Structure formats: structure tokens, C-alpha cells
Image (cartoon, rainbow, N blue to C red; front, side):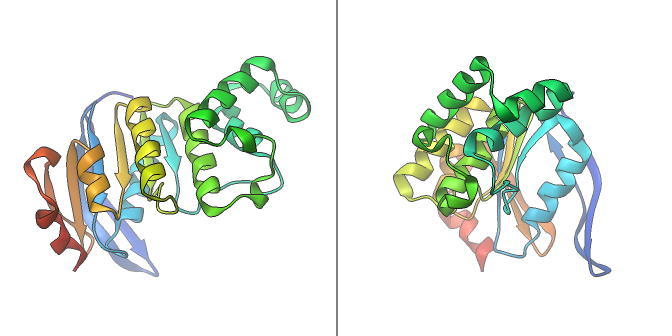
Length: 218
């Protein structure tokens, strides 16, 4: 992926009605963008549109997570690199995973405090465990940019901070929708506020306070 990523004329529709934009957004390499704004403002729609433009060069953590409940955590995470291997490799991994993949995924899961659940079916996980599985899948993908929609909403304070720190260390460039203002200010370099489908705020995080952002949730 070449940066800056210039996104022009982004517009989202639902039921024939425009719910986002048209708007433009430029993403530079090293930008850690927090999308903020109340529910229904258009953050999720904007993330989907960015993902559509970035295609295979972005890793996505969607709000619905997209896990396969019958498969264990390991295989759900492995899906992050599914397209990087041939069919035979993927079929063998389904039955007897290769050591290098087991070790790489175990290391990721350990960072996210999920290593004890590696062989547990996703359907048996709690909401927070499911979120961390989807996050591990995105990390394992090793894409040029991370896109995530409320990735830590089901985690308690200390664990949410730990996971956000992992995302910050693992991805230099990211766009993450967050409802928690303090997390947005702590783990981003740039705040983009969405209100009524438009960009109402775009500023460096270091120049803002929680008081500057909270009106976007009213």
C-alpha cells in the first residue's frame, strides 16, 4: 500500500438513503486515527468504505467479528493468512497445523491473555474472548494498515488498555472506531469525529481534551 492513502468521495447508503458523506479522508503512514462519535453517526460505515478502497492491504476487525463458531481459536486466527497459502497447506493445517504456525499464533494469543483458549471452539468463548480472537486474526494477517470497529468494547479497563497497547505496537498505521474517549486520546495520534455522517473534527490527539470530544456524543 502506498501512503498517503487519499480517499475521495466516500459515501454510504442504507435503504436508498445516504447515511455518510460524501466526504474525503487522507491517511498518512504512521497515522493512528481514532474515529469518535455517537452510535449511528457513521463510524462503522466509514470503516467499511475504507476497507473497500484498501482491499487486501488492510486487516479488519469488524464489530460483528466474523468468527467461525465451530472452529477453535487457533483456526480462526489462522484465517488471517489463509489467502497467503495454497489449498493443500490450508487443508493440512485444518487437521494438523504446522509447528511454525502454532508457535506464532500461540505467541499472539499470549500477548492478548488468550493462550489457554487456543484449542477452544469460538462458540464457547465470552464476548471479550471473541473480540480478542478477532484481534489476533488481524494481527496475524500482518497487513499494511489496521481497521477496527470498537475492538475492546467488551473488555474491562485494564485489559482494554493492554489490548490497545498491543494494537499500537503491532500496527504503525490504523483507523479504530472507539466509544471510549480516554482510550481514543491515549492510543491515537489523530482524532476524527463523525457527526450525522460528516467529519466534524479532525485534529492531532495531543491538541485535544475529553471536553473537546464529548459534544460529538450528544
